[in-house]
Amino acid sequence: MLRDEEENAAELKIGDDFLKAKCLMNCEVSILLDRKCDQLKQMSEDAMNQIPQVLDKSLQYVQRFSRFTNQDAVKQVREVLSQCKLTEFELAVLGNLCPETVEEAVAVVPSLQTKGRGISEEAIEKLLNELMMIKKFE
Image 1 (cartoon, helix red, strand yellow):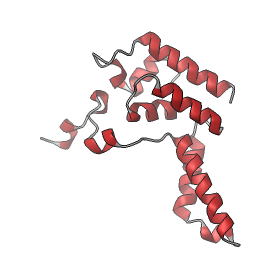
Image 2 (cartoon, rainbow, N blue to C red):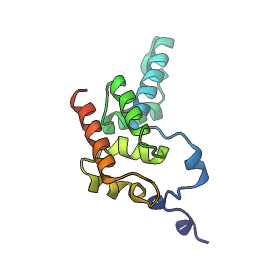
Image 3 (cartoon, rainbow, N blue to C red):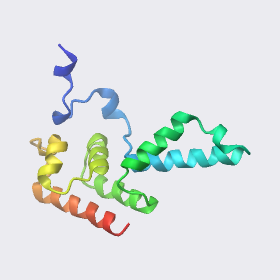
Image 4 (spheres, one colour):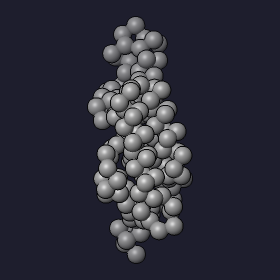
């Protein structure tokens, strides 16, 4: 069987490695990388020479695409998304993209509408509203 036939994110067929892995949102990665850069700066007098370019570029990327910057807001987002019994993959995608409507959410994460999941459109809409409130008061 071809690899494309085996993996299908719409059906949460993303491979065992990804199903078992802890997925992080961009905003969580930003916090971690920022801490690492701070540690490197403290360990050296010449901070710019101690931060590897790949680390710096990665930090710039996740900061640019992070929807949430406040650490408390990031924690709230994970808590809100975790309450809906989402997989790590779904949680990370919704946290990164922050869709505004149920239609957008289902378009980016089709597995939300998989039969037997028990996630109604009302539950998705409530979840999206909570994310918008967190962003609004961040």
